[in-house]
Image 1 (cartoon, one colour):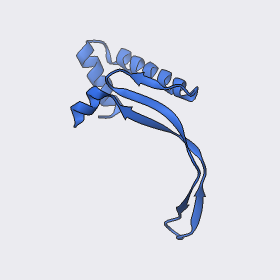
Image 2 (cartoon, one colour):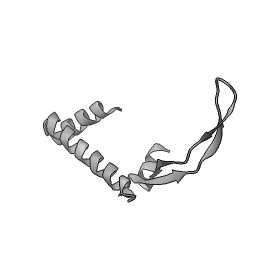
Image 3 (cartoon, one colour):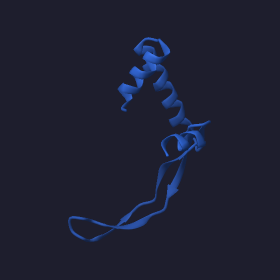
Image 4 (cartoon, helix red, strand yellow):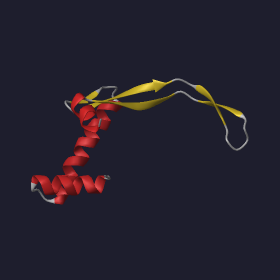
Length: 90
């Protein structure tokens, strides 16, 4: 399911216009991203939690040349599914 399909599903199941469903989804995603940008954990009960962690610098290999490169440290988003989601997809 992509974002457009999710918006259509929200609009259909809730009985609201597609434009309002898209606006609501965009606001939820923006607020989640802003919270993670501030270093906060985002927890959606029954669904899961998102948090930003720093991935340490590491060595990698350039597939074209075979040479060793250094991949710099950077932040990544980690997702841990909640119990309900975990049980549903298992």
